[in-house]
Length: 213
Image (cartoon, rainbow, N blue to C red):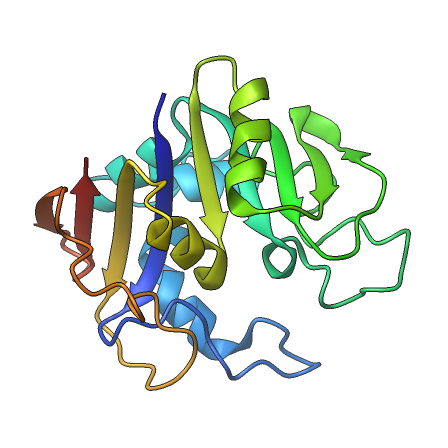
């Protein structure tokens, strides 16, 4: 069992975008950040429900497949679920659709717990107000010996990295500059200590950087 993080970041280290509007809730920068991943066959099938077999293969798709492999539970922040959009709507079921791509128990860190939501495909969202370490303990308890993935957002990922709780960090560095947002690397000086580090560059220009304990 390993605790894993997989994130997309820009060349200048930002894992979030800041150009969202009510008309474009993700903004244009988000698709620039994740375009290589979103174009892969695996992501098109798993996230966008495209069963045609379309999509890129190769290095980016290899990492996309690894993203979903051997995961028994997920941890994410309230923003990644979508609670910040509708914080007071008890019927809001997140922005992942009726059949989210996780297919495992997902623990959502929030200061406003609510009843669990069972979705199609095996995803169950549990909303908990607790520490990162306790959320990890709960996730390990239901992961059935498989990996626990800390899905994000950037602040949640950084909290787990600062606490030394992560066995494997993979970042897909998109060849773009954002200039603002939440920087993954803030307050993580010397993170590479204790990890083996490797890089691999995909034809898309994405640099896959992996820290493995």
